[in-house]
Amino acid sequence: METLSRPHPQVRDSFRAAMRQIASTVTIVTAADGDRHHGMTMTAVGSLSMDPPSMFICTNQSTFLHDIIQSAQNFCVNVLRRDHVALSTVFSGRTPPEEKFKVGEWIVENGVHMLSDAQANVLCKKVAAVPFGTHTIFIGTVIDVRLNEDGAPLLYRNASYF
Image (cartoon, rainbow, N blue to C red; front, side):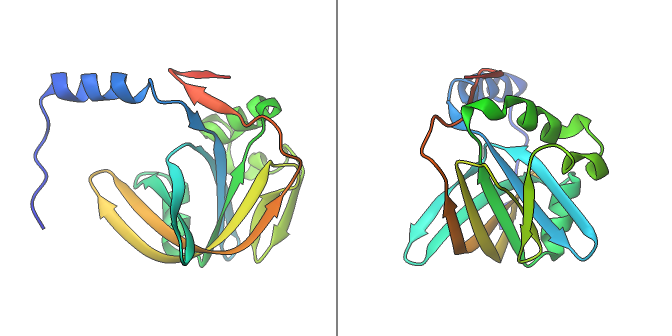
């Protein structure tokens, strides 16, 4: 594999500014390995294939969630609704891991926390991990989907929710 070169600071800054212009649906990705349960607000998620149904999530390698997903069997993508701003904030990093699941209504299935009033829950079996730069792209095949009332998703763009 080719060694990654460091981009010029101007390219990095311009890229960051460009990515801030892309509106993304906000999710909380959850996973567990044994007694360790964790979740994190994420926008770097997406569908990968319909055959087999699969998703990808991109996680910074320095995060606690990355450590857990490395050894976990499953992960869940919980799609947030517009009224979940406070919940998203709790899972964005400032709240200690042991306090996060005390906010919101969570159920545990297949060992993974699922937000009961999420717009959708997509439970995936982890099947691949592809490291790239500072992140790892985890790929999961879908093993269960729960759909709740179709409402407005929580979106994030230019450091603001809408």
